[in-house]
Image 1: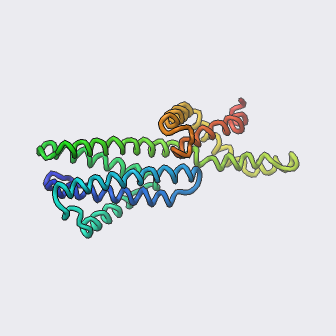
Image 2: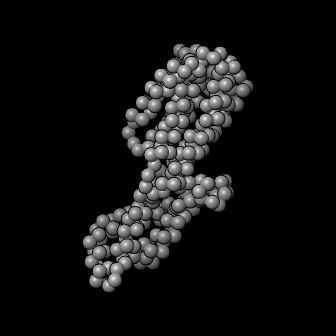
Length: 248
């Protein structure tokens, strides 16, 4: 977003605080705006992101007030900076998942630049050193989760195709089933073949992610969001779709 070489430390940290507040608001808004499959997993994912930032923002603000005085968290100045950063961050291409990933990556760049500059100036206290390092580490996990969500988006968006496929195979008679399936055949074959290829390519990655998240957050998938759905998708498509597409 900007360079900090000509700024004093208080100005730099004011901008970091404002950007984090903007991120908090964007993740919170995404929490409200998610829809489709898997809605609940995405709802929890963004809840996790914005709730974790509340303590991070509070800790930074307290450090800044202790080090530089109350003026550094002035409501009017912080509101103006935060609003500018919200407008900037949301005026980018992509959907809410891509924008969420982008702002997390921007934060990592900001932290790296601030850390290097403050260290070079010998203005980095031990406490702020620890805080910035912990912040960067926590948000690397956010980047991982969002990247995995984007990678799984094809699986999520094509679940409805599978539902239509299986619905097309139902009916009171074989004539009805055949007519219903044939009416959607071109779309279904194209979408399902694409999904099947994607799933075969990434199946091992999905399983590894599933196991990793299970160990970290427990076996209940509601604790860790969208990745829990992938195992279910694999079994559904293996049992119902792959035999028709690949003859096995």
